[in-house]
Length: 135
Image 1: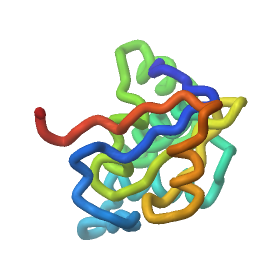
Image 2: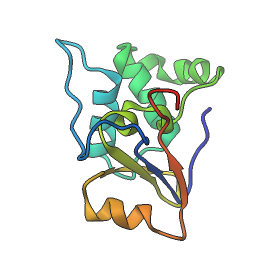
Image 3: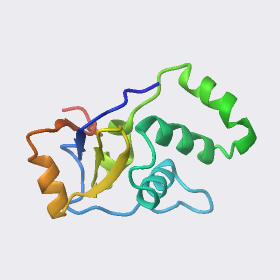
């Protein structure tokens, strides 16, 4: 399993190419992982943990039938998995993620007052999304 973050704000990557959040778009018929992650979190703020998002995005992207999710989740987390710091949402699309005291996630758009509030909040752990390119 990836790390579960509590009371943490993951800011956009230093090399994020946008100055305001963009909604990821599907390429052709199939939704990208970023689209799936965005939809899961945007439609269900504070419902899922980062691990839930990682697994659900994997399962939905690979079109794994729901009846196999329990066993697939065990397999999925039997090897190291990236956390939301590695997601294109923070690297490319300008979305910060706030992980509340229960470890549940919400999206915070880069250009918002809310983003500024979280980015400057003293009581939170602060991390940055991973850079797309090496420094």
